[in-house]
Image 1 (cartoon, rainbow, N blue to C red):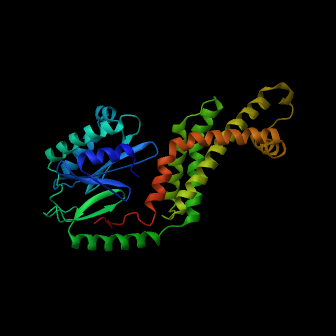
Image 2: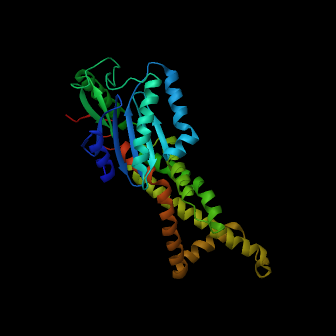
Image 3: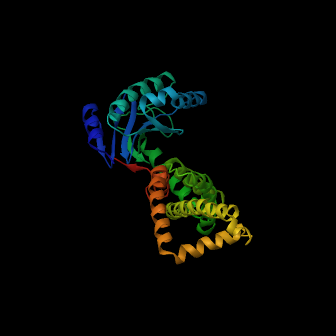
Length: 320
């Protein structure tokens, strides 16, 4: 998606806006810009002949002062491109404009191959007549033959991945991961804290569990992660409330004679949950409130899961 500020920047820099991306050759490199909820993204098609240059670029983008100065939240470095995410608020496009100039200079300093080279084979090409193709919101310049060859390889790779994995195994893994991720959420909830970052922890744990148990890389992955996160938030809040009840049972003299165990407390909690409408309403309200914070923390994970398994994911699309 391209909003007003990126469109304005594109007009100023002579970039093209198409297929939800602003792109064009700038500073000797093919750059691409797009945005989503809470972020803007800059991608640059660049490759290096020296592996040390990749390491140097990664170190540069990981520098705390650089990230703070330009509002960088994350970056991804691939063999033929680099993508940088920026926290989106007023003035971010100005930061991106400044950083783009700085980054292009840095890439040239590190010997980065830009618009005069094919993003696939790294051989020289005429940027004016080169084929422009996008993949995962990044635009590349390619030889026609490289475009055909790479798309065939990507298709074979996607078909191979689609045959692997199991959704049921992924569900089990995601739920187990969410359960582990719910522990810090339970601790925070017990002390009356709502922390969006802990929603991210649940999402990351669910994602890791899905992948470790061999979950299928399909559209189902995103749906499973959403369900697992809801489960994780509910479980975290339930664990906190069960602990409160158990503490009351074990410290209150009037319950001491009953020797109430933790299992008894769990059973009492769920009995109350499904028979006491007031408690049910309170729990549902807390879960919904908690999910708002969880969504803030893991929104990008879910979006990335859907994008990475969509029909256009890892597929080159001609822009000419």
